[in-house]
Image (cartoon, rainbow, N blue to C red; front, side, top):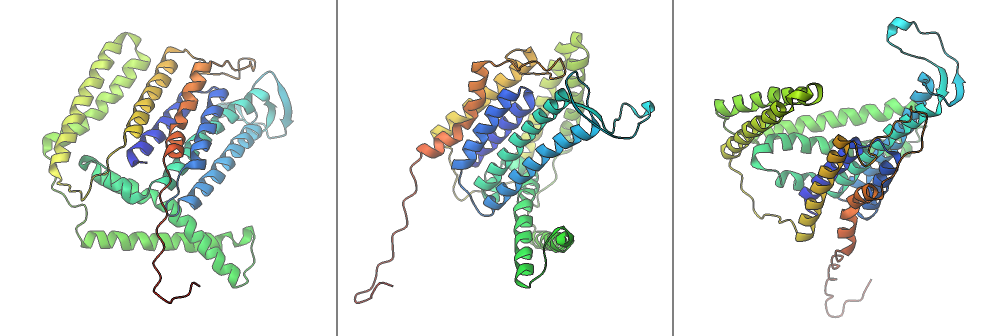
Length: 360
């Protein structure tokens, strides 16, 4: 699949996971992400990084439940009590121990489901798209930012690969394992990553990689003025309902300023491509479906419809479920349908044997 398709899918999963607190919709979204992860291709160190991210997500899910149990929680359905010291009231309601309610554990589980969806989606993206394809597909205006993001995407797979290599070398030398030997694994991996980053930075600096003329002052001022306009729009929309038309005007003004900056940044840097990678028609339809799903999720959340929100502290009621919204969450598995329907690449032909050569 095209890198733009993967980027749009990951952003859609992130928006939907953050837009809803309904555990049913989050569970359907997680199943959709897992389905895509099963059929998604793996490039480079993506297999290792996805396993690491999946493990990290499960640990974070368990950690959120543990923190909810240690801190205690408010609610009507008390499950058990954790002994802990008495914390003064002037600390702002901080609690260490105390009664643990089913409402608190349900809220922590909902937050953990959202984290799992985002981490799994990022793991699929990191394994299915190489960093070089991402950099090639980036617009000229975002070249510098994409370069930083690309280097960041390669950090986790390379670090996991270094940890695996150090662990194998220590095992061959008969070194003992366990938690006590964790610093002996982590320190060489961190030092190796820093040295590799310094060598890459020096090589890029010596070749003048990424050098471009500075932007005009008007473009820089326009980009700087867009941020306070967006902040003012958010403040007016959420805290001053009577000023929402002003918030819309601020958003339009910020969008026009960012468009001017984008145009100036794209013209300041000349980018050439040996061969453009077109987006197939099926993936363009998938991106259009993704945009509709994101707009529907945000619209339902802002309108308070579709049972997008769930509050377990209101007596722990059963979450409501709208079949249409569940189908919208399940529709984010569209990359799996495209990957399954796409024909598998033909195997490479075997090299021809010379006359009289016997097969091995």
